[in-house]
Length: 313
Image 1 (cartoon, one colour):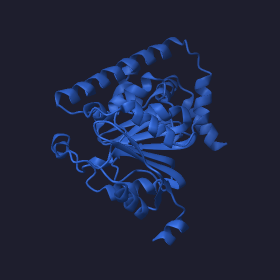
Image 2: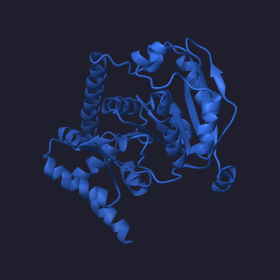
Image 3: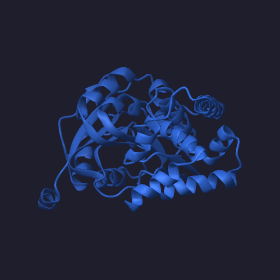
Image 4: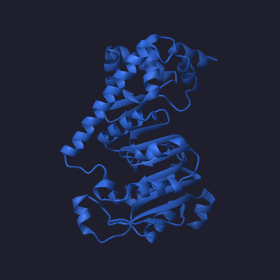
């Protein structure tokens, strides 16, 4: 009862209701919220602290900044928001300003990538068949997932595709510009309530063991200095019996790609992946190939129970 009363008191204030309504639609930082609500940062920070202390919002650090979003278990907050009228003048105005800010940030991030000459859409840069690769990924993932993690999410395209079949989809990336693009994309498509992104290092994922029942790594591993360590960390956060899905370049002889696109590895063969995955406690299933200018392989694997992994070692 005490927890319920704390949450009700935290929500029972006009500004905090507006904050809840905004952060339920998409993660927002304090600067964004100040711009939307037209209030000072100290004032909004106090409101946000009350909401996070009550468990109605969660604070996700990102470099020197932090984003506020509604946590997965905030059912009371969702019940309260469901009773707010969609046509409320203040809430409608808040949504319009938040959408404009997200669009401006996405445009700035996209311009920065083009200005710096970075091929942020790598599949397009390499002329790879994106639609066929995406379909192969979807075919290899479970039909229903409680929680999916997309490592190296980039612009969040995979999160968009899997959102209808996952209760919670989370993408991580080290690039803040990529994350800005992904947040804008998910918000535009109305998916921010079930698909979110945050900054994280694939070698040190900020999640507990066995947090996800599916983990995907799409066109990420060939950039890794230590693929074995990256796969071991991905396996750590995967539940026993969960799916680990890797989509990457098959072994190739295009040495120019390593210099032009900063690839660390000239693709991979099945034996390499099987060895690294086995050391990480996963078993590799039948891989599939997607032909193109460069062949892409999709390697599905399954996390073995601890007892099976120990026997294998």
